[in-house]
Image (cartoon, rainbow, N blue to C red; front, side, top):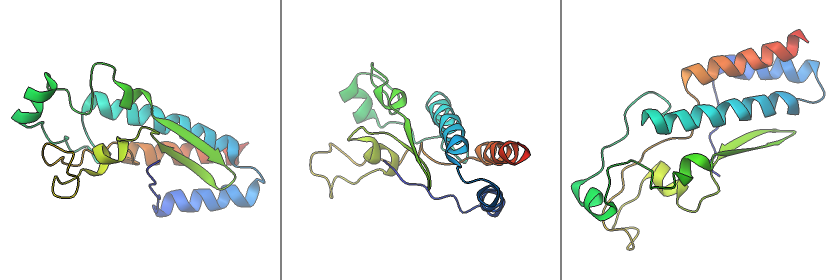
Length: 146
């Protein structure tokens, strides 16, 4: 799984308030995980990172070798379909169990990974957008409201 730590002050404050009022935040973490899975899958359709920046276009060599111009997607769309979340008492993790997910997310250089046919630019798909942040705060506020 790719780990993203949210350090937004408003989110952290809402989490602290929720922790003070509840012994079990797992239901809120589950709601946050479900929301982030949907949000992450939407990024595949939009072809944008969590900040809204477009992903790098595929190179001509990649398009030729793959036979299509779909970014991060083959015919099966497995990467977008395999976005999952895990909850425990400490929080929620969102990511993909697929072996190549980190390479697609962070990118890689042929010089470091000899099996690549060229450099792979990062196409960030996991993260928390401004809209996600607002939804996380809403989920936590709903928990606090009871």
